[in-house]
Length: 188
Image (cartoon, rainbow, N blue to C red; front, side, top):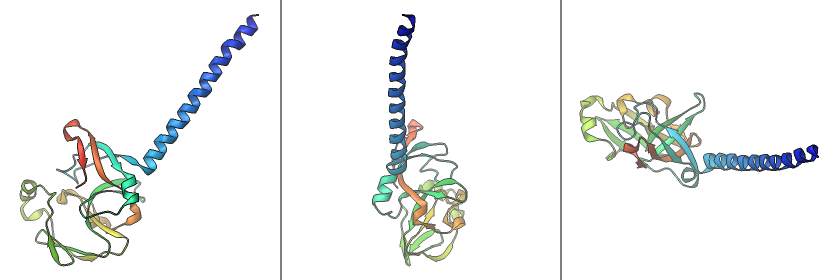
């Protein structure tokens, strides 16, 4: 009789274990699918997007919005550098087919001066003429984007890597979750 009791106790344990494993696999699949096709966690590393995004901020970004729609000028973009196996957080400045240049700190798109309303004027003026150097005209191909950090003196971006190909931009926008003082959506 003692043997039969062990079998009865073992069956509920096995059923619970199988149920737990099923739930675990389903949860892992959901997290994988969300991370691959809907949202992506991000961590801001460095000061290249300061003061818009702070070093050490954590959040999520919109993968499905990037896959479903086009990038627009001044969107925040998440760029994957395969050769370095790292992600960059930058701002889209130039769109496919455009000619981008900077002269005396002014952005020119196809020869027309553009405002950059997302830049913090007080922060920019604290650098004087050293905030943004001149960039000779760059004409983008049909699958290229010119992306810069908001903190131009401290950003490795298209000035270093060249234009980013469309397939390297994995997501756009950011919902900052931590620190709480920075909580909110940053699209531009």
